[in-house]
Length: 333
Image (cartoon, rainbow, N blue to C red; front, side, top):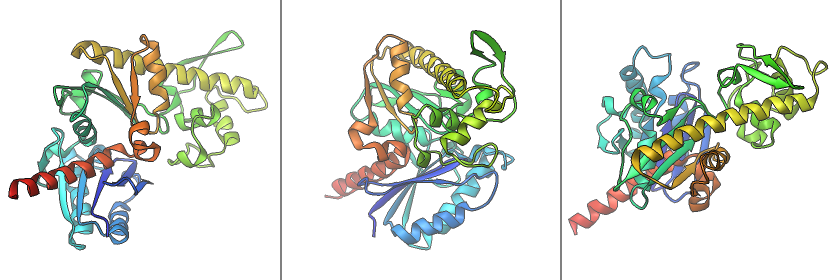
């Protein structure tokens, strides 16, 4: 029996972690395509048998739901159905890092708040989480996260970038590529995603490429090369592998520049001088910090391990539940 687990339910991925860090899992469950989430959560409940569960979510934004509140209800129903049967006590964390009842509208897009809430106990910093789909850039000062409460507000304040290192369409990051000294327009089709970029550049392993590919083929380097060639409407017999590498590198540079500009804006707005990075795309953060003048960086992977870094919001949710229980027991004594 596991004492406490945290669950981070996104639109594409559901992540779980135990408070002791011994369990870390990522499951690709695209909410807009199927209703496999209830079955997955029931399996997790059966396997881990947790006494308590901390839950954060972002999946309510999936376009299969007519509204965020409809998405929240679906996710809460799935969680409650899976873990209430096993007798687990369920804790939901909202976008102010508060424990609230299920179905509360403030549960929307709250996974970053758990991560920031855990770090805020020890650090003043800009917390950066580069995931498969999005990037959170959260100012933390005086023991609290100072970010906007909603995704809409955070998009306005450079605290949310809707790009990540797996699922982002390459064509959304740049509109031209320089090949052999000549500028070439990019096709706006969904031919390749950033998972292909970082496979070609050797920055992620095949096991990290957890989402489906644009052509529904495999995730080998060779298959990623073929997809990236299509970004300029070419086959691999028309352009060299080196040219494909150049495409990948220019996409990486575009993401680093965008990330660096956003980090710089948030650092300056809040008078902060330290970045703490996490996520499957942690490798981009130090490059982005260097872009803006060698800002000191720390990494969750060094603090808690690489596996925990990839599922940090789930881990943070578990740790915050653990802390709440400790505080309640202390107050009773």
